[in-house]
Length: 408
Image (cartoon, rainbow, N blue to C red; front, side, top):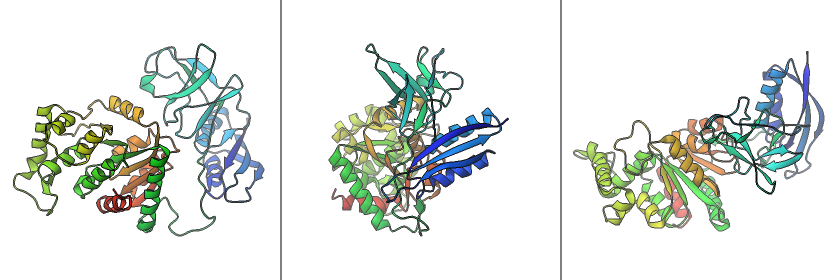
């Protein structure tokens, strides 16, 4: 038995190669297609539209295909209303729950489309109705589901919007990938600096996600400059970044290596432990700043300016610092609280925290990944953060030039 479903794909689907990706995906999953309608935009700012009739051997194949096509913004032509069931257990989504993407999403309830307020990938969709009968929709992580929540199941009645950015030119281009070590760094720096200025001017927040290599490569003072100048509004990191930032300002070393000469120091291997111990004695980073123990650095400037930060811990952390959140679920929830309003995100020399943050960010956030390792950007894209743009370079000099451009 052959089953069919008609999908609609709209946006910059030709010059972005999105239409080709969707058609390839149909064939890869063992189905077939027919393009019943294709309308190509006349200019680079015009959207295109394709109507695709998909044929599969059974409903299971078609359901799997529909779920994967939705990630690319291909929605059923006749979606119907969403099917909603009630969760029965705290922390457990109903069987067959709809799994979300990070793209702008709408749910059809009572023949009306309702926008999802907080797009986030790998969540469920909850439908709420207030006393006046007004319907809202939100994403909900699995662990935050409560018995009685109304949750969308299946694929019907849900549609997403594909990424809206169009390429500057169609066809073959050199260095046209999202990550290339050969792209002109000066142009990328200028573009990023201008985007950060725009964010500050429009009230959007800039998020910095920092790994310990930021400190090791000499980028710590530049992060401090950017925080002090008001160009960084939120900071996510781990125990290592904060520890070595404080170590470099208290003892002049980062993991025992002098930040001025690059040489090892006698007994330097224990410097970070001594720093952690003193911060723990004071009870928090803020208390250590107030006591005059810490006189500079990124964490110092965050405390001084009231910039919120989340230090997400891991099993390998020394100490850890008293501010480090060792409950990773609680840390992720705290990060979720700070994500709304973020317009620009900088992923700086960190793999795990970049991916963790990317999982929480809507696809509309302008995401920049600066790392010496091009695989980090690839990993971000592979895990759903398709909007991430990569700059393959040493993060320390890059941050120095960025801070200079911004006049911080």
